[in-house]
Image (cartoon, rainbow, N blue to C red; front, side):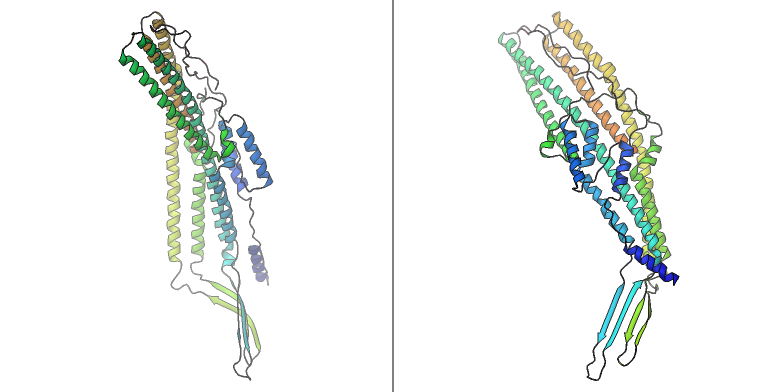
Length: 487
């Protein structure tokens, strides 16, 4: 009687499993927020989602920042929203693993072919028996699979956030590079116009005039290419943020910040990555569930299908009979040796993949750390040495030009070299922040210690603005570069 009650309870429990739509999404949101301080949200078309949509409009209405871009991507990226649905698929598999198979009902009626015969009936109700005892282990394997899938989804969210931050920095730097190209074009056009006047006065040759005009046209083409790249970078960011229509009119007001005064503590990052990265944790869970699946197969290798049930039968000329039935699958040929061998191979495979992922993670962290430190050193060298030297060259060239010791074109060449140095500096700072975002992704969250709060001051781009009208003879004052920038 007690065994019957236990079996009935198991049947009832297996039949009452249900889908909880929000299951897993709260865990993903918590994991992501712990690591980067931003939340995710699964869009289901509810009134709460409409509130999120209004929040997105608020974020995009003002000046877009790096953190705002990450937040928009986590809330609105279409590919990420599709990835969130993997939790629903995984949960359905988990619920299915906790359900018992449906009982089988068989029935037959035999009608007599002669008038003196009596009809014969036969009915049976059969239920699988072994699965009642394997149900807890099956549910455990499915739950571990769901946990691994939850970690993978959270890892995808972090990857999307890192990509959004990197592309944002790309757009931010590209805007400044376009501004620089416009300055170069303005200077080149001014030089070409001056050369035209000097050529008309007979002060320069046809070759000099053609050279200045060619330089101006090349500067115009470089600006066109830079503007096209800016459009392409903006569209990459639009795709990451899931934006279309009027929402694509966002603007970035702040300039690319210089590296911070204090770098994040970079020691023991390898251990941090192994401990914190969600894809490694998911691989660890995958190895555990493969072991449990292997144990399940081993524990039932000598038990085939066992069906128990109730059977009722009435002979044509006899009484109705009622009694239990038992159907055994004899594991003579198939003792699940193939399935066990497959699961053993898959378990070893998952162990090797976990090891590979851990080894690669350590190596990637070391390489990313080296890249970050190198780019920081290069940017500091530009800021403290190269840019001041270029500024000094322009100042000295200006003095010599004012003293009529060099010509205008030598001064313009000095300014062109200064602009190219600023361009290289901007690209280096951009690469630094992209490397910073990549290193954060590789360690699975924000870097320990340090912050991006207040970056160091960076020099402003030189804007050539003549302070005195040039004369056809080529004398006068040349533009002075500006100083200081607000990050």
